[in-house]
Image (cartoon, rainbow, N blue to C red; front, side, top):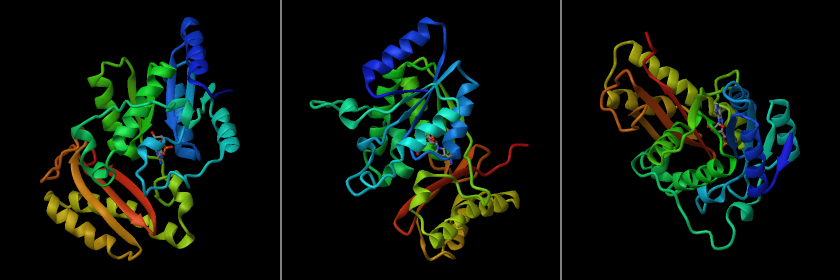
Length: 283
Ligand code: AMP
């Protein structure tokens, strides 16, 4: 596996692959890799001859009071895991490589960035869209794989490629969970053992919602109120939002239709976690 640090070297590598007739699949990450990331990398290999993973903690997508400075950085371990997962090139640029002095462009995806996480993290999805746009231009992939854990991010990227006519297939990967149901996240490393236990209630809330829907309850306010009571059983968990939205447009649904997605965000101690899932099991 090649470790590539500059945009110019990355593009030169990609150009050589393209000339050799190889398709490139890109998996953008912020590192501190876990089994979820590695599963995305393996899935990427099903869609192209070569896989590029990027490893970049993007300052533009962090708010001033968020965890940019403390985001876990374990480069050697990540490189080893990426290589074992079939990555041919690991693109790991510095902040000044991607944002040199004088940088002043932002990519704004409007409506789909606004609700859910966008409401409490202003500018977050602009940071995501800007860096992903740069990665697409630098790496020149035909396919890019993103996780459904960050469902809104996936929706923003799908909108971005449609709106800017990027000829890149966007592939979503299902949420990878720990055996006890907690969605894997690099931020889980922040949790104390007690918080780690409390965090299980997020996935349990999804199961509770599915139970309510399966028993015939389709009114969003009733389900959301029930989930608020359910989550209140864990005093260490402070809900930021519980929302039922259409899975593609991310607009609120007053009634739980077949395309409904339950999305939630909560603080467990000082760690912000998200989870989501469909509520109606396809027949
Ligand atoms: P991150 O490093 O957190 O920016 O994540 C990089 C990519 O991995 C994103 O597309 C995430 O949605 C995806 N990802 C992170 N955690 C999971 C998970 N538990 N299951 C599926 N995809 C994930």
